[in-house]
Image (cartoon, rainbow, N blue to C red; front, side):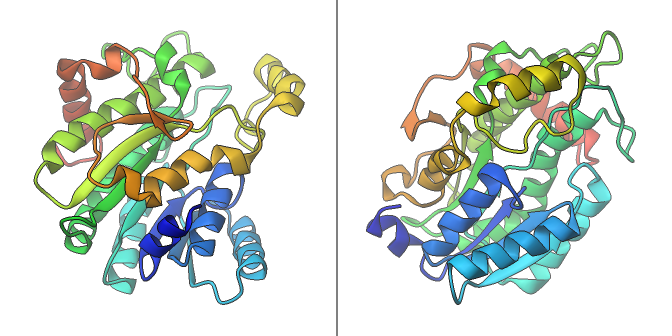
Length: 291
């Protein structure tokens, strides 16, 4: 991260979900090195303690606030947001990074298909629960930032409004691509609603990364991922675009865009369809009880 990016984060508070490994961990580490105070969010208490210890060892004096939460549960998301709002009087950057792919169809405690619940609705609900804190922290020329880690897989995605939770012919890849398309659609819809407020929101493709991403899979999918893993990029490289969107002065005021390799690039045709954006916005709010 450039010196300008480091200066931009001095005194700022950033929250990173999925911060215990892979891209999320490297994003958190980069933000800590840039001087930000960090809220580290992870599902597993042991991994969360380990990530905290590793960052403290790498960045002596790092200001860290570890928070355990399962972001597939709407009750836990609301609890997390309430705890963060009580503990911090500002939030300058929210990095929605937590996600997974599941080789079998499962439902969450809320009765929602797990991929859609975690990879998409988790972003939606946590963002909306923290939006007032973000808006109160931003100002003209120094907007608060929401960073949604999507994927190029969204290009293969389609929003199946007639079967959004994949009750028929479940496919792990199809469910994941749909959720990642949901991330980009949500980003665009939210950006319109934030116009004129000191908060920006952008989505990104981090690259295809050698991380713990597919550890929930087995069978053919898990075997295939294991074969290509040695040829994938590192989590450190994968975090570069997240860090760019979180801190770079070059994207100040930029909102509603999709990035790859730190560049603004076109997203898929369906992701740019405003009517689909609005349908997903309305559906998502209904599913998280904010409709």
